[in-house]
Length: 304
Image (tube, rainbow, N blue to C red; front, side):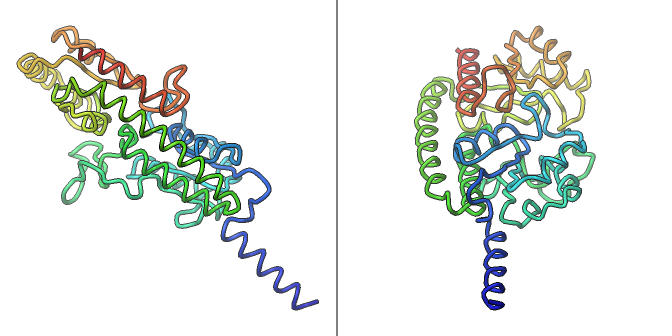
């Protein structure tokens, strides 16, 4: 009997460590943004509950580390982060939650950027003089649906680790979602192909992956450096260059200031598009496919 009890305890510890401990109930997943939360829903289906710590209307650079967020992490089986040093505010919360399931390196910790090839990786040391430069590269890769597929795969792998008993369901959901996303990527490519090479100005360097995917020309930013407010001299030079090149579109997220983008649009005749970056950033955009549909159509219409 004593030997049996020892074997039982060892088996239970192994199951807990491997993630199978969640068998028989839904996997509780926390994400750092709403786009990742949608991916979890698509892959996890009715075998998961998921909540994003950030809202779709927020700038993910600046999330206030509140005690309520710690409580949510404390009860999680799995945590999915954007990665590429975008959501670094999550690490003090992880430490405070003291939940071994979601610490870095655990079976329940998923960095969605793993395997994604980032752009704009700065050479050498990064200093404050460069503005808010991310040392691992531009972290806004989810606006490229092809790179986003890698994030979905990372989420699949995490769910399988945490709940192996549901692996077949997760993989079937993943295959179905990726097939649907691939079909939409072909549609979006057709919509954007007539505008290949056209120049676009953005407020922040958020849209570079989006522009690259559809063959648009990233012309410049209203910020002279990331997170550095524009000076009047920078704005004047940018407007002169935009007029010379015939830039027709400016992209800006809702949480960035309106003053200079509106002035530049007025002076150059370019169309100012205020567009959400995240799922739920605008009413009715409750999934990634809905979000990308909206973004592609808005930009294509503005460039037509």
